[in-house]
Image (cartoon, rainbow, N blue to C red; front, side, top):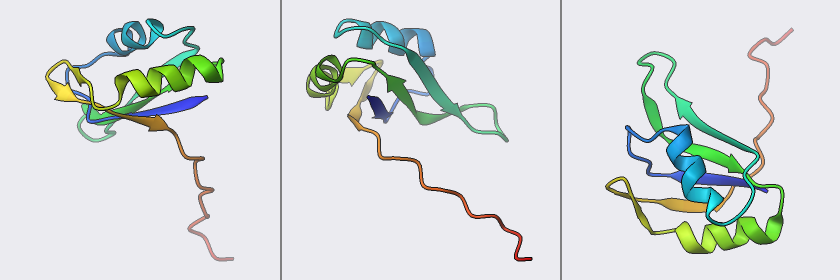
Length: 89
């Protein structure tokens, strides 16, 4: 299951986020989204957990929990919308 993690501290790292979620089970991937222009965190990221039961437990346990000075927003990620081409041929 792909999990959205919002309201991250700008100092949060993928390693610290992985450690937080590993308390609930196996974590496949962690990615914090970085702003292309500033190179700084955009304050949200995604955690992929292969076991849905563990992922739901992580969501329940971590949503509205303080982490590194911020109260996290944690929920199942919505599917990424398809991007349309900006070209109209």
